[in-house]
Amino acid sequence: IHRAIVVRRLDFVVKFTHDNHPDVASKFLAEMEHVGRAAKVAYSNIAVELLSLERSMKATQSKLAKVKDVAGKLYEQLQGRVQEYSAKIQQMREKVKYMEAERLEVLLKFGEDPKSGELGEVFQSVVDFVGSWEAAAASLDAEAKTSESSSAQAAGSTASSDAAGGAA
Image (cartoon, rainbow, N blue to C red; front, side, top):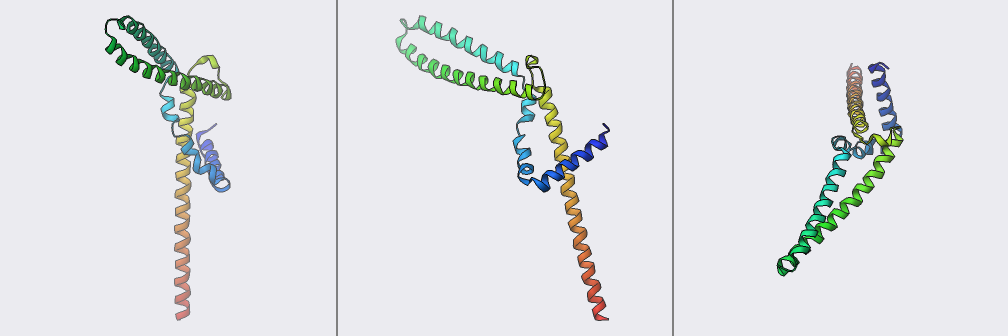
């Protein structure tokens, strides 16, 4: 499809949305706020980093258990920190699990292979679309302002003509 045709169609969709569904139009860009950052983060990196954190924490717990008899007070201080960070890692695990479910849902909705792994290309396509949407919305706003100015000037010119005609 020729780019000019696509742009005109998007302009139509933006105008239609603004005119008929202003609530959707006003929320659309806000809903897409984090997609740009999501396009830059590889899910596989997050999963690998989390796994590395979990392994490190297990190693720390193992080493800490060996120190318990030698340095009881130090052990107590460190054990509190280990428990705190273990809980944070568990919270991260739950968030990554939720993210994985969301990732799979997005891949399936866009007809992508769930085994492909990454959403970067899908998100980048959405980022590109959002940029085009913003441009079309700005164009629509500019047209509206130009139209308002023209209408105001025409009304002012008509009033001047009427006043001049009435004075004659």
